[in-house]
Structures are given as structure tokens and as C-alpha cells.
Length: 339
Image (cartoon, rainbow, N blue to C red; front, top):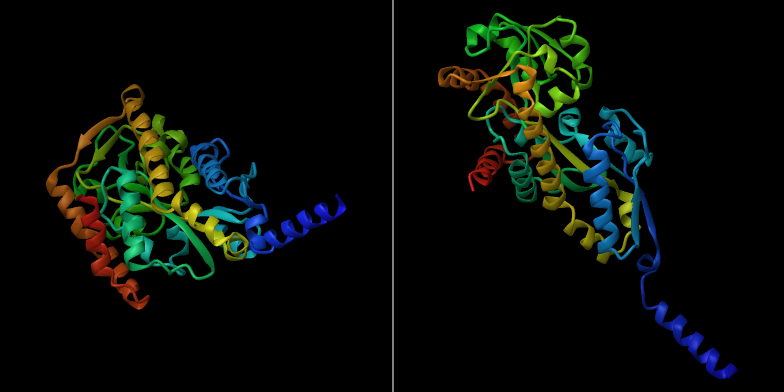
């Protein structure tokens, strides 16, 4: 009996020795979410993704989401690089000194009103034109949220360049603030999370860049009288999801492949679809809130698109400096949207 037991143990050790230690290890990942814990990104989309990660790795990779963000929104990439979190989501506009490619989805009058569609298009464009742009972390996915829109806080809708130029507008920092300022409007710019402080006090009489769910979430509906609906959205914002390189290296190649199968386009589309749902619910609340939806005058849309051209040219120049064929990437992205 002793000999038999010893033989079995030796065989087991020998068998285990043929497998990489990584395949036997359990990896825990800390997934940071900078939105409030009540936001669907934190309590729906990312938890559902973690469930899929655990399922496809048969429990070898599991994750948790802390109740509060370990770093402010601008520092998500830095937090992962430093190991404060293993996985995080970063607004690409805050790291454009580091990455250029995903801003293809943030060019004015380029996207659609479908965040899921834009998210899929962005991931396809990433794989084709800038798959290795993140060099300090491993990229898991990229996505686009529902587009920002133009709102009036007075009884008069904004539906011409002159009407826009004659307003004092809260605008998202970056391209939208620059476009509005170039048109002659007074501009007050701040992060979206601080928009209520400005808009609710009547400092401005219009705002540009928030999507419908943000207008609802930031409790801005009581201060908003109308929204101008463009056929092609003025602006959309894109995000990246990534994991610490050292943590990624702890995971076996088999499990890495399994995780990417439920990340990439799949995770991006999940984010986009949930944003579509939230935007739709917010738009349904417009009528009760007394917010009028005004179709944009085609002449206004064309003039505003032309006035925004310098933003896209700036991105094309930056893409070229980064070694990306920006013109081809932009056309590819648009083509994906038309499918």
C-alpha cells in the first residue's frame, strides 16, 4: 500500500510539473471605477464583465470593485501603472498627451446617436490602426458613450451660429470649449461633474457637451428649456479599459485569450448599449421636465461642422506625429458606422 501511495503521489507531482504554475494560480484583480458606486458602469457593466472573466477562466481570475475610486478621473492610467489598481477606465481626452488613436471617435460631427455602434467601430479601428499605442499597460477594450448635445437655458432654442455666438455657454473642456469660443460665445468650462455648480446658478444660459443621461444624472433638467438635435452629433467621448502589465503577466496565456474574448468589442459594446439605454430613458423624461426637442436647422449644422474643422485637422496632425495614418483611420471608423 505504501508503495502504491508513493507511486500515485510521484505521478501526480510529475503531472503537475508539466503545467505552468500560472495555470494553477488564482489571480485577484482590483477593478477601479471612478464614477459614483451607484453609476451603472460601476454596479452593472463592470460587475457583469468580471462575472464573465471568472466564468471563462473557470474561477482562476476573479475581481473586486472598491466602493470608492482609488484616484480622481484624470489619474486612472497613472493609478494602474503604479499598481494602485489592476484595472481602470480612462477618459481618453485626459490622456491625449499619451494616446492619440482613440480620439478618432471624438472628432466633431463624426459619430452617430448609437453608442454601441460607435464602440464597436472604435474597437475595430483600434485593431486596424493603433493596437499597440498603450505601451505601459495592456489594453482590454475601448468604447464610446452617447453623444453630447446642445441645450438652451432660456425660452429661445439655440438654432443658428448667431444664436450660439450670442450666448454664454458652459462647455466641456477641450474641443467643444475651443469651438464655442472661436465662434465668439462666452465660455465657462469645467469637468462634467462640476457642471451643476455653474449651470444651476445661472452663470450661463446654455450648455454644450453633456449627453442626456448626464443632464439627468447631474440634475440639470430643471435648468434646461430645450435641446437642439443634430442629425450627426456634435461630439462624442471615448474611453479605454486597461490592466496593469505585471498583473496581466501573472495570468496564463490561455486565460489571457479567454479574457480578451469577453473584453475588446464585447465589453465596449456592453458599455455602449448601457449608455444607449440610459440616454433613451433620460430623453423620455424630457417632456415631463418641460424640455423641448428642436431639430437643428441644416444650415446651422453645416456651419457648425465647418467651424469645427480645425479640431479634426489638429487631430490628424497629432496622429501623423504618432505614426498613425489619421485620414485612413478616420475614414475606416466612419465606414464602420455606416455598416
